[in-house]
Image (cartoon, rainbow, N blue to C red; front, side):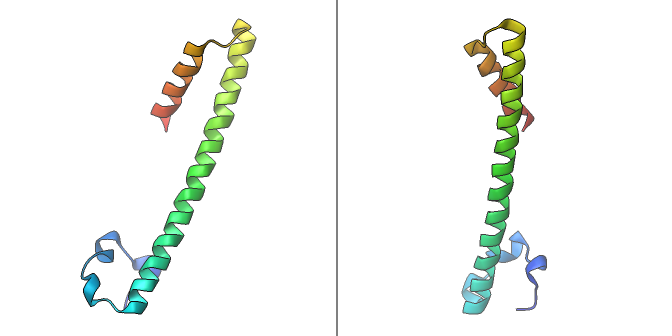
Length: 84
């Protein structure tokens, strides 16, 4: 096996799968599941932050204009999409 989970690199994962033991494959799979979980959690956090910022901007638009126009929401979505 040789490498620790921290040393596992993308370039190593798919190379010579047929030569890896069952234990090695299970370890790689477990590592990938953990990575997926971390990225998924980070994605949920980012989506929450985007929602909070969007809500703040909508509130500011309401205060300034008294009403939020559909074009304002579309523009906000465009701005946020570019920023992330």
